[in-house]
Image 1: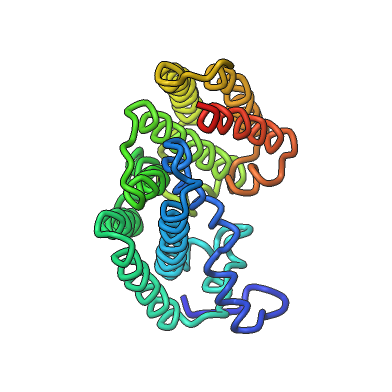
Image 2: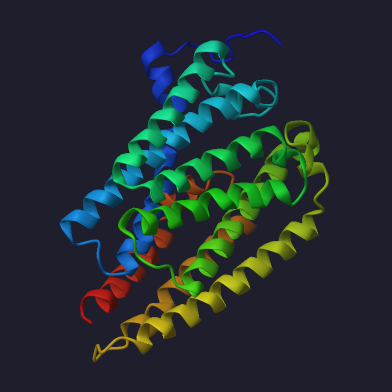
Length: 301
């Protein structure tokens, strides 16, 4: 299908390029701060600089993959009620230009990561490899399409640890992994509800998943994530000498935030996780309380 204008008014080319990079979704890349913050080194100038660099590298890599993925999905996106307004699908960015920008951004992200250390460059390269494999194959295979997207979130968390060279707790890894699956499953449920009978045309795997299966998968991910976090909190508390049980107390706002997000998913939200997180005030408040309590546990030890 040739490029065609899908919006009532074309955006300026420069703005279209920025919109296609999806800066709003860069909030996902804040996961790179998780491991350095949990290790209590984020307040050190060198570690902070390395983490910020990792964040920037992931923003660049992610935007590059968005360009390539949207170029590959142009026909499917034009069937979606909202994704059809993305600059590539709307015909505001030529396909050749989009692919060239995507490749350039990815190469630049890996080279920039090498300036931090080779460990970060490996993680960025793995992220690019997985997202590329996802675009070409995994998104067409049920279950693998969910795992592929979730892996991108997990690699963001690993990138922070790689950038500053801190170990990752087993429980931290479990929480990050099942938390990522939890969000991706919610996204799939929201897409299926939003697209209705046309869901399979937009994303073939949505025609494979029974609604009950996705609901059960969400329940499993929620359970493992909550149990994993509790065990991680008690592990952190075991090596802490704080007089107040901050890590144990952090379980309460964490659990509330997870349950709140789950409620939002069950009421039809979740198609864009960043919109859910940033657009729900109770969820933001719970997240802020959790961050404060956990930070007190880390920095009062």
